Amino acid sequence: MHRAATTGLQTIFQQRRAGVLLPITALPNQTQLSVKQTRQAYGCGVFDSACRFIDWIASAGFSVWQLLPLGPTHSDHSPYLCLSSLAGESHFIGLRWLQQNELLDAQIEISTISHRAALIAAHNHFTQSSPDHHWHREYDRFCHEAHSWLHHFALFMALHQQYRQRPWYEWPAPLRDRHNDAIAAIEQRLNDEIAQIKFAQFLFFKQWSVIRHYAEQKGIFLFGDMPMFVAHDSADVWANRDYFKLNSEGQPQVVAGVPPDYFSSIGQRWGNPHYNWPRLQRDHFCWWIQRLRRHLELFHLLRIDHFRGLDSAWEIPLTSHTAAIGQWQPAPGKQLLSALHRALPELPLVAEDLGLITPEVTALRQQFRLPGMAVLQFAFDGNPDNPYLPDNLRQYSVLYTGTHDNDTSLGWFVSLSEQQQQMITHYLHCAPEDLPLALIKAALASVAQLAIIPLQDILGLGSEHRTNTPGTVGNNWLWRFQWQQLQAHKAQQLLVLNRRYGRCK
Image 1 (cartoon, helix red, strand yellow):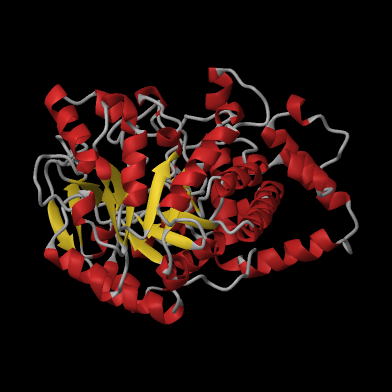
Image 2 (cartoon, rainbow, N blue to C red):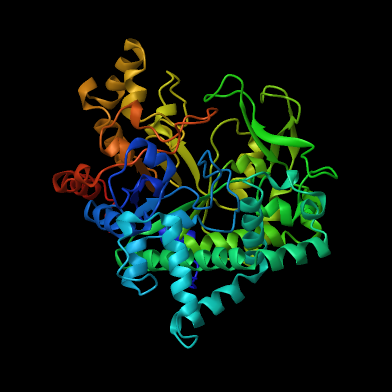
C-alpha cells in the first residue's frame, strides 16, 4: 500500500489548477472488444492504461485527474454501490504490469486468456515461488496492514461466489448472522478461494501505488470520490450490521435517496441502508476513520459525495418504490468531521454540495473550511443571482462544466430550446458551434481555484457518450474513449488555454 504523507487542501488549492474528470473504466481496454464483450469485461486490465493517460493530461497542462470510486461493483457496474467501500475492483489490475513484474508467466498470451483466469494463474505462480522472494514479504506486510477489513471482504466475496451472487441477507441464517461455528467451517472449506481474493487485493493496491507514484512524478494529483452511503449487499454492512439501521433479518428499516430534484421528477431511490449514527458515535466513528484513511492511500484529494447527508439525510420507507415519499433525518456531521480531523489532521476533502442545500449544510462545510462545488450546466436559468454563474462563483470551490451524472455539455446544449441556447451564447459571447469549447474556456477563466472538465467535453462528444443517467439502470458506466481521440494538437490547444488562465504550474 502507498504510505505517502497526506496531501493537505492548502497544497492543492494554493494555486489555480485544472483537471480532467474520467472514470477509470473509460480507459481503453488492452484489446479491441465487441459491445457484448465490453459489457462482460467491464474495466478489465485498465490499470495498464493509466500512466499513458496521465502523460496526456500532463502534456495538456492539467494537474488533477478526478476519478470515480474504485471499489468492486455489482452487476450494474455502479461505482456508488460497491461490494466493499474498502476493497478495490480486481478487474482493473493490468495483466501487462503483472508480466513486467514477474507476477504472471511471461509465456501466457494475455489477449487469449480471461482476466479471471490470468489472476488465478498469477496466484498459482506466486504460491509456487520462493517464500524468500520480495513479493512474499510485501504480500505479508499488506495482509498485516489490511487485517481489519481484508479477511471479512475475502470471505464475503467467496460466499458471494458460493451462493451464485445472492446478497448476504439471503444466505443461510448462520452465515447471514455470522455465527462463529458456521463461519469457521466455511472458512476452512473456502480457504483456497479466500487466499485468491486476498492476493488479488494485494495486486490491486500494489499496482495503484505505482500509478499514484507515477502521477506524483508528473505533477498530477489524483482526486477520488467517496460515496456518502454504502451498498446494502456489501462486506461493510455484513461485517458491521450494528452500524446500520437493519432489522433482525438484515433488512433495512429505511433506505437512502434524494427527493425530486433537477435530475428526476420522482427523486432518486438509491436503496442504501441508513447509518445507525448513535452506534457509530459510541465507537468514536472508527469505521468512518478507517474508510477515510483507506481512500487517502489511493488519492491525494477526496470528494464526499452527497455531503448534505452529513447534516441530514432523506429516509425513504422500504416499501416505497420512489423517493417522492420520505423525511429528512439529522446526522452528527459536526462530531464526525471533528473526529476525522483529529485522526487525519491534513484532511483534503471537497464537499459535493449540489441540489437541495440548506443554510445548515453550508455552515457545516464552512466550519471545516471545505471547498464546495459548482456546475456550469446549472447556471443558465435566467436568474442573475444563480450561484453557478461564473460572475457569482466562490474562489475556494471546484467548478465543473458537467459531472458524471450530467449529459455531456454538447448533448445538454443541443437539447435546450432556441431561447435557452441564445441566452447561453449571449452570456459566453460565442456562436452555437463554439460549444462546448466556449463553456470550457468559461470554466478555466473563472475565479474557481480548481476547474474540472469531463473528457467527453474536451472531445466535444454528444449525449450517446454520457457516463451515467441518474435514476436509470443499464447502459450506464460503459463509455470508453479510444487513444486516437487524444491527439497531440488537442493537448496543445488545452495547454495554451491552461497557461492563458493561469492554471499551469
